[in-house]
Length: 86
Image 1 (spheres, rainbow, N blue to C red):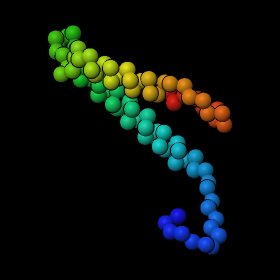
Image 2 (cartoon, one colour):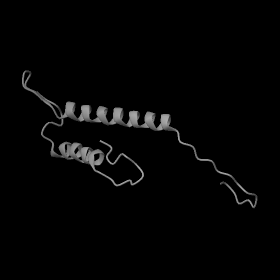
Image 3 (tube, rainbow, N blue to C red):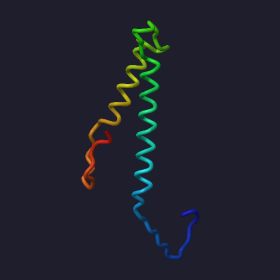
Image 4 (tube, one colour):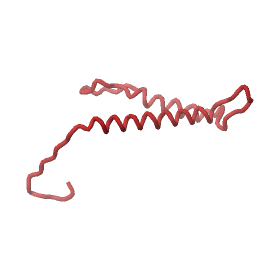
């Protein structure tokens, strides 16, 4: 793969389901942490009358909506039983 060679080359591709599960778990954790942070910064506490620094910011609400749309959009993968990340 790094240089031209006239000798036959065999490439073996194997499934690594455990690695895929770990990557998906990492993604879900990162996504949830990001949403928690957004919610925290954009929150308003009625009891203490305290607003987060991004409370009422339309940009942060748009970001949150865009992130949700990314994980909830359906895609057509004919060879997969999964069609939505959400």
